[in-house]
Length: 434
Image 1 (tube, one colour):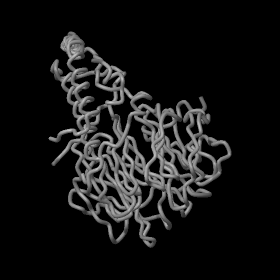
Image 2 (cartoon, one colour):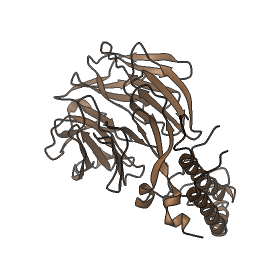
Image 3 (cartoon, rainbow, N blue to C red):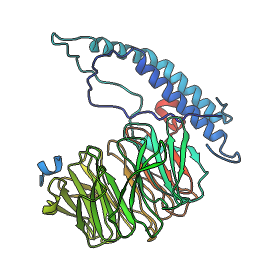
């Protein structure tokens, strides 16, 4: 039976301009009603089937140096509470939406529309984060998941695993849409391009370290990128341009254009590199040897415009990332450290410590969409939300972990793929309001 994974969107605090159309007065209320209700029902399904057999379903440079039935009575009651909460909230919500609708229908003489603030259902808080648990699990992997990526503007997720498969998921529909095997080359790292039907991935066969641009529509290679001579351990696409950056154990970082097979630039490093673009694509970071080096992508050949220390941690870099707003960055290292820094000043803001990972593993971490929280794996298989919650899993190796863009959901990958969502039955703000 097909089930749907509903992920409430994060609350939008900034105003937005709606052009050329009107929002129905009931649109936001219905969105809230459906999101919360379906989320609770999904949680109930998860609890009811838990014991069943089987499974399946440049601002840096410019500022430089400045159908199922829940069997669990607890969850049945939670669903009822959720419905009751929605009923009691509907009148107030309707009045607010009507006011917004009236405001948005007013036009000035030039035909521009007044700005309005869009209200959506949930805002990420510590309480919501603490309530999160697995809402859907896919267990049909024959090897560990080595990489995953959410598309920024669609509901798709792609995974790569040691069973030499690339799998495409529709998160909103909680379904695996396609599985493609890469038996000849293997697959290690994978990420979407701007097109949700095209991915870039690295090999894992020990003899060919090329990167490949693959069409998921017809399972055809669009381009090969040859230049590395050892395993690629870092891969990051620029979200604003058709560029990407890769780092390898051959101690090189290469800059690429998706439209050309030859690399556009080469930087040599003294260690295992971790590399990433910021969200604007103007700055990229390369981490190795206890430092993060900041480059202007328009003149990277002049060297880094700044170098940040991570407090004496010289262990191998695993992952470096920017928050969505570009104000923060994180670095994970093999010794089990997760460093969070101010990406403008390089100030070390926090360091979280977990069990170290093995030489063949990667310590992953991810910012929540608004950058307020960090989730990570651990060398002992735990999943952490710093410094809010920690979950014990049966895994003994670190999870691959990614937060879904703009959603109250993150995914973990190990020997299985898990989607983590809030359990509203644990939230007093919803269950307690009768």
